[in-house]
Length: 307
Image (cartoon, rainbow, N blue to C red; front, side, top):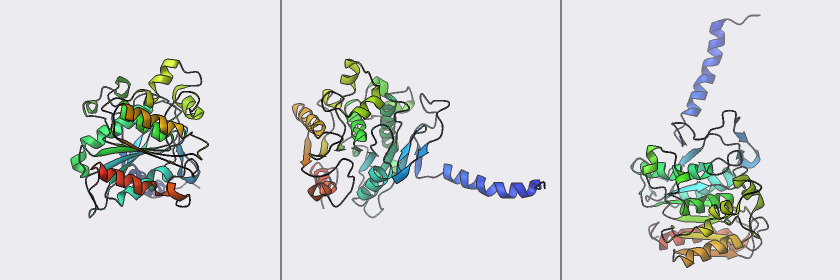
């Protein structure tokens, strides 16, 4: 039986309205409204995985989590979830972290950046565009231009550290007007981060997904943040554990030592216990308290007001 056209339209219109509403969600900010640089024409759909993970990111975004109006203090945090540059732990190391820092009066933006389907320099372009976009709209978001930090977990820590050492690198720019805005984060929170791409402490999956299975020595050096520290690298708070079997804690130590050699303010905590990827788990002893320690460090460095 043929369905009358008016009936078909009546069924379709609510779906169109819902689709339009989702696309217009004010909490999701398109990083590249002018067009994603290097977009693959047949990249396929974004993958939604178990436990709030996402993969095959083709259209990078920021998810905006404003601080409560009665607590907002002008500090902003861009959060880069981990996932070995293969996927993103978007809920556990993104949204949940953003909500935790919202309680401190911090306005948060969860970064959905491109991963293995692209490799560098595209993740770098995404994170620097995120910083530039947030800074360019600071007044709109009710934040301060000089209090925009970045938090990175695991491979997201590598991306955050890359932003802190390569914010003005040519490969991080696309020729857009926003390139004129500084992409330098004002501070870094590096949580069980991938840092070095060198032997023997590299995370193999991250290196392959980022720069390929057989990278040149030049590429390895170029994309290892600890080898590119400069005196104007932003201050950093670093966390790792001796028990981490995925990303050796030496990554954190190498970054800390390089920062100190350049006289960049930094604080490091290497805990005895805690598996890789623990996020905000509350059952792993002292390592569970890293958010409180980070908040204390932010207050010490005047990125948060005193209690």
